[in-house]
Picture 1: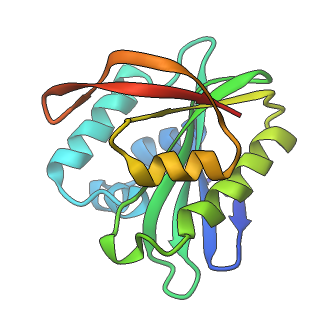
Picture 2: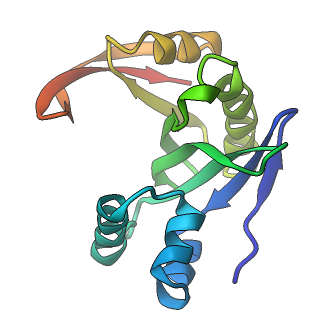
Length: 173
């Protein structure tokens, strides 16, 4: 199996996930091994990820590179941060989540995002990173503002959340 890039911060290990790693997982590993590696909690999450893989997780001009956030002390996956809609050498959209409630509001995503943004500009040759944030997502708004993302506009009815269309604020860094 390809060895993923591992980035480190004070409290986290950031384990890379790429299309090549996805390919290796789905071609050579069992369902349970895939679920463990991708931190999928149930069959529905597995089926959703498998469908993304089967339908193609990249196109000829966009790609993705993501990182699972692991607690350094326990090696437990606690979140994810992804560059998606990545046009190599140009721009990418960033998304992030802490999946375990006990790790929220501890500054961990700020720690991870600082390292991942640096990686994006220095290793991926990005000149622009975009974030789409719900106007109701105060923690995410505070996070992008902390890093100096600039607000560029409002995308109306841009995102479906629990069956309801929501607006997104477009930020760039």
